[in-house]
Amino acid sequence: MSNHLDPLLNPLDIQTIQEIDNLDLPIMKKHHVRILAHCLQILKLITPDNSSELYKNSLRAWCDNQSKKFDDKKFGDLLYQQLESTIKKLDTLSHKLGKNIEDLEISDLVLLAKQS
Image 1 (tube, one colour):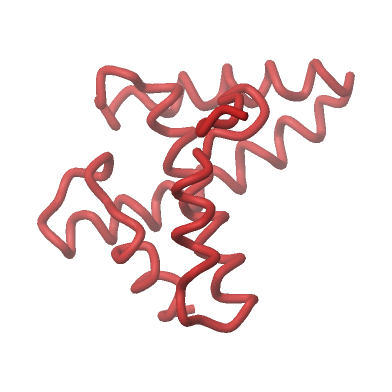
Image 2 (cartoon, one colour; image 1 turned 180 degrees about the vertical axis):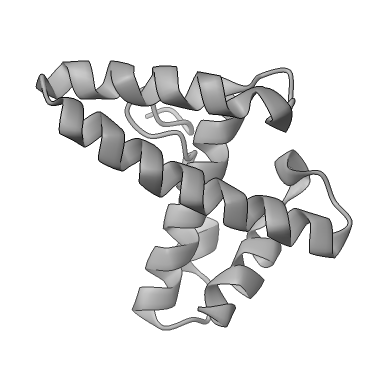
């Protein structure tokens, strides 16, 4: 079995999933951290040049492509809204920490999850 999951099916690798599962957090906080990590990985996938300035167009196109899989435009719109909202939170966190958004780590995501 590979140590990496298919990024088209799940952008989180097995090590990240295990790291989150091993956190000393309530189950709902772990779930929140997984969602944040998932969104961060999607951002990295859609903007491989690490330019968060270009993410909006890339995110819209990625969400539209996802909605085509289900033949459901509303799904793409809702997915876009949710991801955009989360990416804004990640961007705010990265600025507070003095990091680039792509350099956020699980420990940083835990801070954000604990604030919620």
